[in-house]
Amino acid sequence: MTELPPACRARLPEALALLRLLVALESPSTDKAAVDRCAGFVESTFRDFGLTTRRIPAEAAGDQLLADWPGLDPSAGRILLLLHLDTVWSIGALARMPIREENGRLYGPGVYDMKGSVVIVWLAMRALLDLEHRPRRTLRILFTGDEEIGSNASVDVIRAEARQSDLVLVMEPALPNGELKTARKGVGAFKVIARGRSSHAGGNHEKGVNAIEELAHHILALQKLTDYRRGTTVNVGVIHGGSRSNVVPDRAEIEVDFRVAALDEAGRIERAVQALQPVLNGAELEVSGGLNRPPLERNATMQATFEKARRIAAGIGLELKEGSTGGGSDGNFTAGLGIPTLDGLGAVGDGAHALHEHIVVESLAERAALLAALWMEWA
Image 1 (cartoon, rainbow, N blue to C red):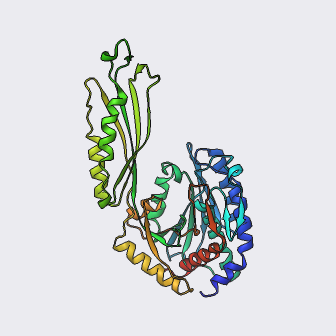
Image 2: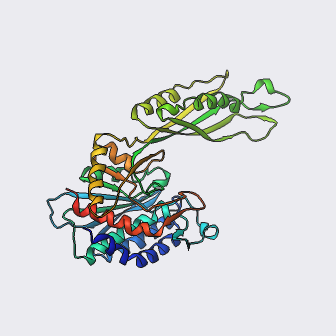
Image 3: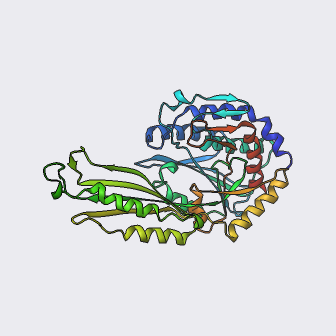
């Protein structure tokens, strides 16, 4: 497979042109029409390879797109690739973050997370076709449209497809130095609503029950659930409440993010939050939410999967390394099912969700060669 890296590098200019087009198709998670337009472009692009495609409509998010590349041996099993077409950037972000190439880097909204990954898949296929190679296993590619907002519309499809696959390759961007992600924290969220009683802050202050004051007690309690030793963080990130300073507020709410390195920690956090009780007389609490993505743990399955990938990478002259991150991905869902999963196979770069978001251009060819090798050599 040593011919793969040069074959990918030969097609790099075309891949870069395709990536510019993709980034220009802004596709924020909350704009279904925009995500669907991007899915339509991707669908036509992969149909040019002769792949069969199918759309799965979604009401509250971008449609899911499935593409199949049949393997040479129908009995050899299937590899699932996971990608998402939605980004965190609103329409118009290109005005602040114009697509530009500078010092071997390509900048633009969504280029790293994760439109560069779409191009890596295209480049890997293009190189294999140029070399007249075809994987034995069938490749199924699932493009989703709501990963950045929790994957609520696509999680059932992700899990169903993973259960029918021997290996899941998650095309999330690599860690900054190119490492795969062999551990991710589990991700969850809560909303806590406090209800009190409104009154005039001057004339009848004593008759009111201040919902913001009620939440203040719980904000401190929630923040104290953080345990860095266990890899657990709890963050009260949003608070809403009140209308005017001279009115005792009768309603307030907070939004809470939590991350856990192990599944049993999720249970501890969920029990603690669900057990919150009102502190002020006359106040009421309403708690909703919980764990969204289970942890992707570096267990025996993950270690064996990475080691196999490391050996395959070495066969094409690449040194593969691993690392961990506090962010979640759709790989959390598939690893949680016990399916061998490799995450972080996307482009090398930096600045996910930040104004300096970029990819290292040369990494597109390197990651495409790695991806093609995994398709061809996975046993």
